[in-house]
Image 1 (cartoon, rainbow, N blue to C red):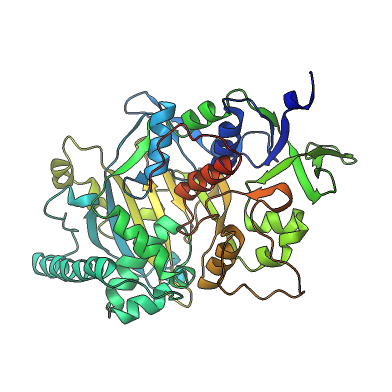
Image 2 (image 1 turned 120 degrees about the vertical axis):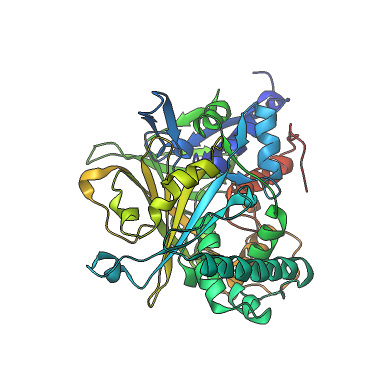
Length: 472
């Protein structure tokens, strides 16, 4: 090398989910080659696709990919994700769904010998089946009444989303009260649908900023769902090509120094006396959940402790009793239903809502191979029929955590800052060369679009041009 102008900026990216890989990809593809990027991953595989699996479809003999967690996305909300996929040449296709709604008194009643609960409605995404399939336990009159009821209240909710804006610090609970949505519609339909997207209990969802859910509804209204052809491993392969990746490395601290940032890590391989290693980087990008940031980056310990997270489980299994207990579930597999679905690739998702002190909806996605994927399981699944089980961290949203994120990521924010236990200067994204990216690092639902947007913001701050069109 001749002179300092040829010395590359050393960048550490902690985490190899979507946000980490997109950020590393953008910096690594810098036309001026100014960055030497190294990705740290705690697992033995890149985390974006580490929990997914390939299975054989016995009906077709074709090997299919099951993404964990589910990576379906809707058109209007995911503009930047779609633009990136288009640029990378990732093929995605429309995917239709049938949602079967059922309500169960409690987890105990599900496991008891009482008469089975009923599948009370079947909704087709974007109403691709013009007249809703009637559950076999519903009379024609009750079915028509349910359809009319849903038309009225879903239309009212949609109108309110466009004409009644949420108040600045309003929760979703307060918003649905303000627009006078009936309890049955909220608990049996609205919350189950939203909780299947946000993968969290109803109570946590009700504490979300109303802004998040209303914005999501407005942007996805009437748009199709899409899935990546061949699974998200196609995305991971393209993003990770040419990257320096240090696997099985747990980062334990990120400490800004007078010159550079010290990153310390340890191996997670079976070595009871694994020594710690460290290196100095010019920039560090943390692509990990808030609870991990709290553990490894002291300047944000207090703020990150105020952002709630939960663990979410997804189980791939063949225990059909988890849907068989419900009277009427075979409606979706009956001859009449198959006639209606003829020529359709619609996949079935059962949304089973358990009432009680802490209402929660478990989602059971019937795969083309016949396997089931249960997310946020409540009912017991036979361990002998489990193919794979994975746990993910879900970042929750509240008006308070939203304000924290606004303070951290808006470098010109003049709004009230969250009270700190100690009086000190508010840390903002990029201070001392440390940056945050992730699905939670923007003002919206914690989904893949947030990963792309936050990564694009960091790349722009680094002076790297975004090769795909940035959509508002």
